[in-house]
Each structure stands twice: as structure tokens, then as C-alpha cells.
Length: 195
Picture: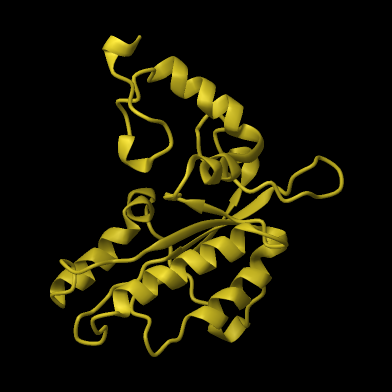
């Protein structure tokens, strides 16, 4: 990503403040009476090679006239990420080592303000978020949704890609009854009597 030097804005914050950065947005929304409303957020991991196309996708699907909230973009180095977690990072191929080292975390933290978001507005925002996530996950962008919710096991398998078998084996080892996270629809809950 490039930038215009005259528009560069840098703020140094403590590590705690960086980790707690969404709290500032929460406080802003609370002060305006907008915290207790729907927040259809979309979070994506986007490989460096797909970030320009992802930006174009966002600009095609959102308008400043109906967007309330921040868009956060953070680069991260893949080799600094703990590979033993179950997060699904994108696998954008490169030349030498097989995957790009730079991945962007992009968070669209929208608020569905009742004053400007009429009855069908929330459904429209959710539909557009799904369209953005699907378009960014397919094809040349190669993104992965963070905190995803997929409609079927097949979609979850696609989400985890080449890491699915490891993910499923760990779930079977550490949560064989499917007690943890049953609402995501990845693994069915197994009753102890069935074992």
C-alpha cells in the first residue's frame, strides 16, 4: 500500500492502548448513544498481493454516505504469528518459500445507526459484508475471514483449506464431545452416551 506523505497520520501508543484500541471506538459510540445498536463488523486477513484489489472491492461495495465507524488496517508478518493456533491465514503463493510473509488485518467496524439506517438497512449491510467476504476469499485476492460464520461443513473445510485435517484432529483430541463453540456449526455436539 502506498500513501500521500501530506496525509500521513502517526500516533504512538502504549502496547496496552494498541491492544485496547477498539475500546476507544466503544467509548465514542457510548457517548453518542450508539453502543447498544447492531454492529455488523467484518474482519478479514488479506495477503499483501491482494490488498489493492481488496481496497477496490471495498470502494465498490461501501459508500461514505452510509458508513459509520472506522476501518482498521494493520500489516502483520506471518512468521510472527503462532502457527499452532487455529486461525486460518491466507495462503497467497509467492516464488521462493510458498507463501507471502505480509498479511493485512482489515476490520470494518460499522454501526447500524437507527437514525440513518432504516428497517432493511441492517440486512443490506450483512448481505454486503457476506458478498465482500465471499469475493475476497475467492479468486485473486485470497483473503480469509476472521471470526467467520459459515453455513455448512463444506464451507468450513474450504475456510481452513490445507489445515482442515490438523484442525479437525485437534478438535477431536481436545474437545471430543463438541462442548466448545457449538453455535458455529463446525462440529456437531456428541453426547457422552453415544461414546
